[in-house]
Image (cartoon, rainbow, N blue to C red; front, side):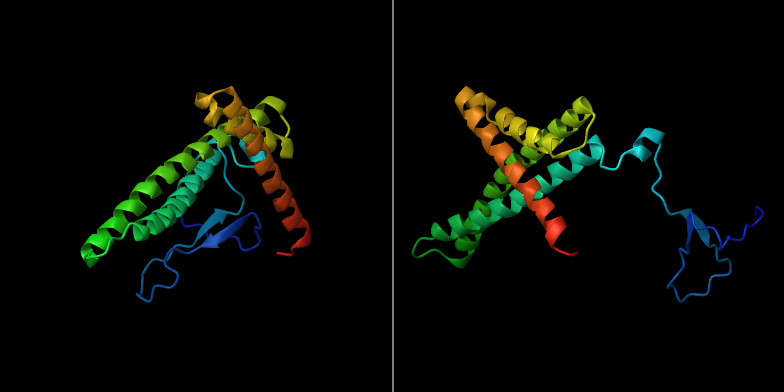
Length: 186
């Protein structure tokens, strides 16, 4: 075995990690590892930034959008499935209608909101890289651009309306977040 180093209890840059903590089985060799407390980055530029990078944003916004869309679509599909009951349907047929309707609507809504999250993450990261400033205007511009790009295939007027709605929604969300931070002690 390599020379064993004892962890230095005075080092504040690290924390102790015992992988066998809580296990009641006697283990002959117990290693206590000293792990860093700060996040580890591959490049120094990443360490200096105080927010998520592009890949983190893509994963977060796309995943949250899909999850929320699937839940909302599943709920609306549940309502539609219950409304489509006919007199004389068996319990199996009713359950089948509800499951089919929920699955179909959940997939559709999840895909739509996942795509919106994907476009928003790219727009926000692009605005931040372009302006080299991290402020609320990047988010508002990303919301505006997301709405416009998402509805661009339906024409200029539809894209302009969707862009305005996206910008207003993101502006309201950013304002609400700032108000919560300021007035609600967490």
